[in-house]
Amino acid sequence: MRRFKLGEKRPLIIAGPCSAETREQTIETAMQLAQSGRVDVIRAGTWKPRTKPGSFEGVGEVGIEWLNEVKQATGLPITVEVANRTHVEIALKHGVDILWIGARTTVSPFAIQEIAEALRGNEDITVLIKNPMTPDINLWEGAVKRFIKEGVKEENIGLIHRGFSYFGHSPYRNPPMWHMLFEMRSRFPEMMMICDPSHICGCRPLLHGISQQAADLCFDGLMIESHINPDKAWSDASQQVTPQDCITMIDNIMWRAKTANDPEFNDELKLCRQQIDQIDSELFDLLSQRMKTADKIGHIKKANNVAILQSNRWEAICRRTLSRTRGMGLSEEFVRTVLEAIHLESINRQNEIMNSK
Ligand code: PEP
Ligand code: MN
Image 1 (cartoon, rainbow, N blue to C red):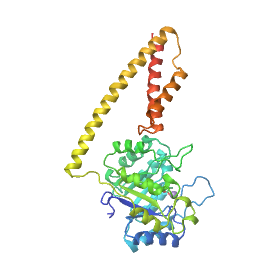
Image 2: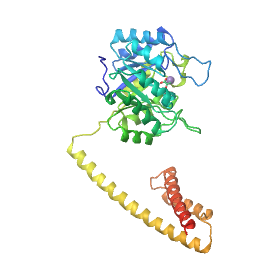
Image 3: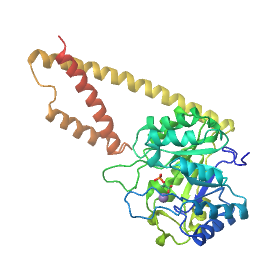
Image 4: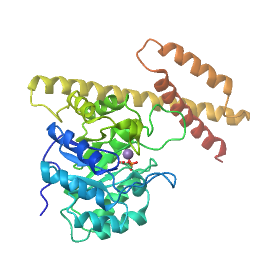
């Protein structure tokens, strides 16, 4: 029977190097983290999925032996990434407490199926599943379901949000796309959700901000990469922090309670929520009226054989709305997003009208 049980500690703090590189680096990093008393689980990658061949691809099995030395000295559970059946067999042989599934593996149903089957008969093992590289919520859900189907208990499965790969400009290595997380939470409301700020940020200065956001959004823990000499790390050097900086960061995060019993807080919240519900219902009444008017315009355009998209008119709407909403406390990005959604819906409806008999 394994001792580690997901959910017993909140927030759950997992920390350790991106990769186990040498015995000294692994043990020294882990011991400094463990001695702070702020870390609950030690992580290290021993098989590394690297983008290009020829990079450091991990030390393999011996890395788990180093982690086990730390476990023996500190009593802390350990976790490694597994990406195939062999990894699972080796990790189980060494009594690894928690297995994590990397983002490059969650995208592959074949790999997930193989790992899940290799875990048969080990329903007490804890499995943390990172989101897939691509923002495809169904792939993530599918991975969770494959593990459950092969017998891993749902209560022993946790999710790790490590951001999504994105082609374009972003200050983040893998932008967080929090709305995907809200969707995942509604699909698995009881599942522990851990944030990995290191792979989201890809750099040190943004780590605290993302970690605090995760705490504000009610995440259940963090997985942070830490290295005794981050600049010299053999993988993910720019996002790793020294154990000391890691501890300082952890100490500076304000964790929020899921709820509070204070009656004053609950009354105030109830009132605000009633207001929100009222405003939402008025908003949608207005949107419905707006769409009916757009439909009317669609019929007039059809009768007069006029094209749907009138770019001058659309540009004028944007200009006027943006200038009116300036100073209202709404960001330009938000105003544009809402306007574009409304405009698209109007265009789609007018298109239907044009093409109807
Ligand atoms: C890691 O945790 O070191 C790792 C490879 O992460 P990801 O799968 O999120 O890229
Ligand atoms: Mn890494």
